[in-house]
Length: 90
Image (cartoon, helix red, strand yellow):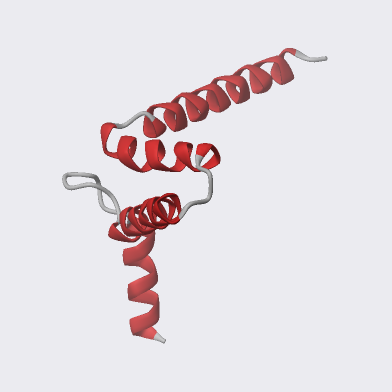
């Protein structure tokens, strides 16, 4: 193996490690705690009506947070702006 491929593999390893750490940090952000706690409790429920309502509420909360977009102060998603400009021009 040439030294070039050793550098490529090293850079790839660092990029994958950074992505993993980024996802790990995202998952531990405080505003995910309530939804994750509710979703984690679903397997422990007996199937009574209250637990079904709790699971539905957790799913709705998860959907609401996903649809709301990034939290306040986050950098704008440039992909959405690009798509909007593309749709306006077509």
